[in-house]
Image (tube, rainbow, N blue to C red; front, side, top):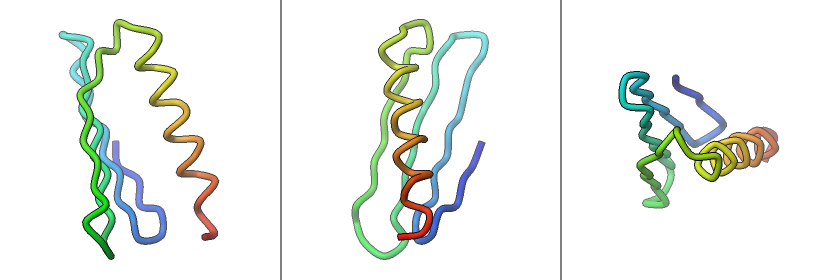
Length: 62
């Protein structure tokens, strides 16, 4: 999955076989990039992912 929100690109790669994921966020105007490995078998990583997507969606107009 990929999102483009203003000057940021977010990529989420999911491996259904291993229940893992990789979150990549690139800021096109700075070095404020983020990478995170996700264990999609845990509720903590699902909660983190939902919060990140919600926060980034709220930044659309900024």
